Length: 376
Image (cartoon, rainbow, N blue to C red; front, side, top):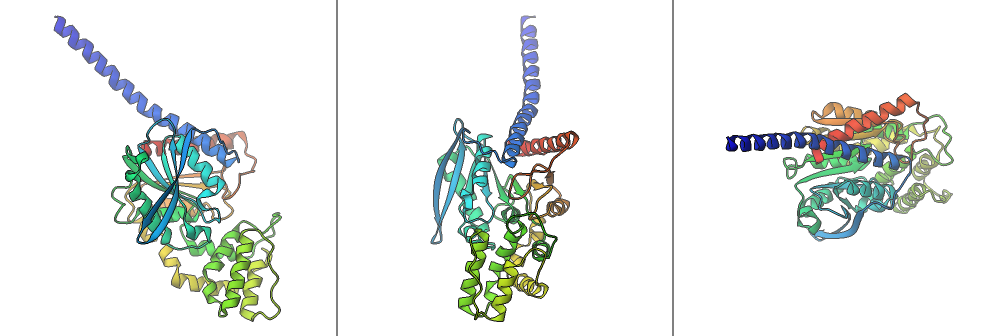
């Protein structure tokens, strides 16, 4: 009789443990989702907290004679089991861009190991597939780090142009069967379609400088500068476009410039209500033949095996949200969040009603809960 009672007690205890475990797992995901959603919301509103319990160190590595650097973020008080390679967008600051640093610290404070590669091509405003090789390099490096000893799951994340490179990276044969997840914030689906929007004339905005989309326009023009016949004019135009990207004073056009260089200078500096359709068509054809095929995610989407998380701002003024909507439609295992809390380069200032705020918050929590189920 005593043994039966003991067995019964053990059965009850085991049952309670199972129930508590089942309750704990969804609860853990919910806590993670709420904390991450709140952290992203703070970032979107311009808040950059400096008091998060995160360690930050610089990493160095080399491959085939190339030297690489990255920043590593990890939780202060425990060893993470999930790591993500997070790639910032094109900027002269690279992985040191304040918003990239802030996002990395938020993710690390929520329990992830975060590595942000310092990609020199991005610092020089170059669009190319080269960063894919660096993303894969840092993926291989994770488990050799002392902070990576307990890592059991890895993922790739990217912002803007890098969001699409993250998708292409996730499709590479050496990682596609072992990668745990991929996340893209504000990615493109069709680079040529975006380019046409960046070059097109549009109604005048209220911006005190050029509109945000011109940032991409100037990067695209820099990528096609080999079209310029004269090498000195090519260097001059490169400096002009770089100054525009950095919001510096642009030197005036030279009186003796060729008609070709003069048209390029005019396209770079003309107001947003104007364009040079013939020249933009020439630039697009040039890039479609030389660079764009390597940056097209279409084939890669068919090879991705892991869950994909797509985040896009409703009011993104550089890459429209329709790009992520299209990616989501083409990916069988993807999750999509279109949020009015986000734009592309700055905090959203659109006034939302109470019902809109509630819906946006509910959508974000649902999305981040799904993310938690995969990464935790």
